[in-house]
Image (cartoon, rainbow, N blue to C red; front, side):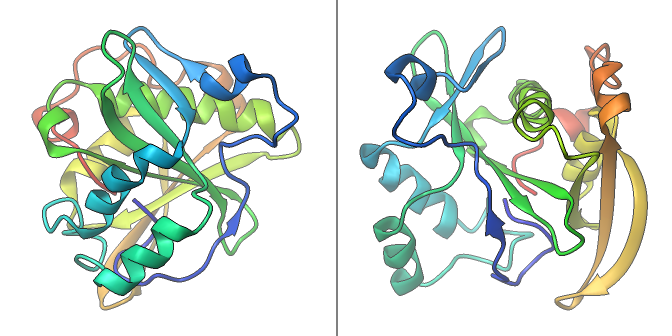
Length: 207
């Protein structure tokens, strides 16, 4: 999900959502892949988002489940992010968000439901999100993602996406690693041709 590890530090939201002036078709499909659609969050999706905030497995490297009060506040708020759903059935696979990191770079965050782990959806969805990020924000030269170094699944996924480790630091009581990809590298399709990730990356579910 969000960046470093366990802190709910605020981010300036730039989202994957569009304003109300968008056409219904654009709102429904922010991006498409072979198996997934990245679409805007709807009101009836909030229970699934609540599960993502409170499931101990998904929150293992994100500071653990949030309280009922915090979850309720987030449900009542305006979700900023995109849900990844299957094209075949419309089932929710995961969630993706773009925010501004403290450096000013775009930051990618994501979380995937455990029942969909091991099928390559994380790589497929995040690849689409990276492309969407650079399309939506033409002034952005770099996109970053931060995860705990102990989260080997997420580390392997970021490397499979073509991202490069650029920093390591201690924060929130854990060792964090920052990965980055620039516009040119993303446009070249770095990581896009890797059809078979190692076992850890393919099982990824959270960041």
